[in-house]
Image 1 (cartoon, one colour):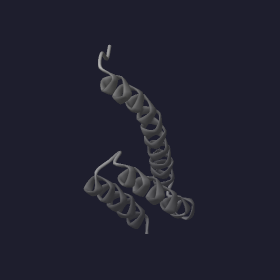
Image 2 (image 1 turned 45 degrees about the horizontal axis):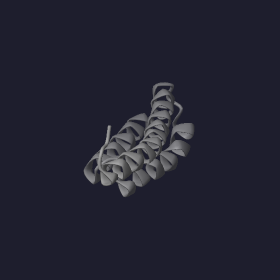
Image 3 (image 1 turned 180 degrees about the horizontal axis):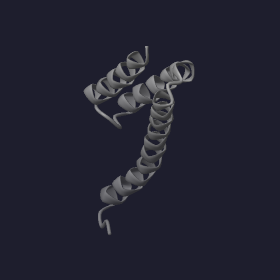
Image 4 (image 1 turned 90 degrees about the horizontal axis):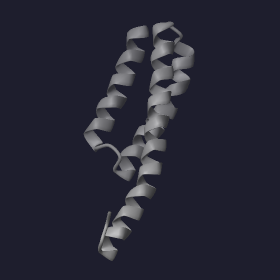
Length: 87
């Protein structure tokens, strides 16, 4: 357990950040999982509608520092590559 006041404050902040990070992670995973299902089902129209949602989630994750910039770019690139394979 934290002893100093600054350590206690850091612990409180960490708990608050954890909630937001879990929310951000689940949003990204949920959208990418849905996208992959649509790609496997060869449903290009629905998959295309989901791309902006995925991009927004990844950009927010990068902005808040949940994932690094290149990781976000790599994920977006893989999403588009999977979509282009359907064509």
